[in-house]
Amino acid sequence: MSAEQGKGDEELNDVLRELVDGDQLDKTAKGVARQVLTRGERSLSPKQEWVFNTQVRAKYIDRACRLCEDLIPITEVEQSWGNDLCANCARILGEQTSEPPS
Image 1 (cartoon, rainbow, N blue to C red):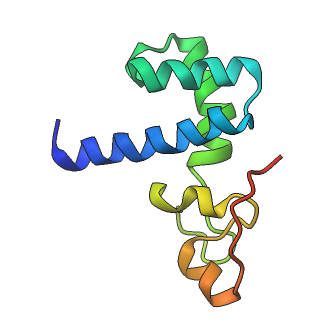
Image 2 (cartoon, rainbow, N blue to C red):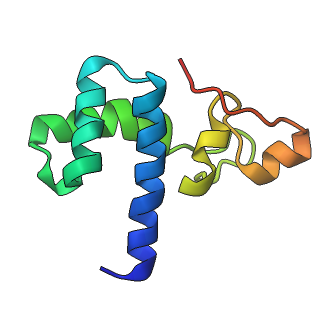
């Protein structure tokens, strides 16, 4: 594993910990997120992978900025919850929030 890949995994784990600790996820998605935290994405069954991709990754991680439409970097996704903006566009518009989507 490269240092860059390890850093990306750690950033994903930080986001997942925030989701699990913050109670944003339903029971099933929370269990799958916990498994990803402890054993990694490769440990997921096809059904668990579907839950992770549709209820966690699509909603909270793989997000596009509503203004510039670029993919929001993993390091900025927590700050995008609630305003759907990348950090640059949030600065431009003066919108800084990190409330998770409902």
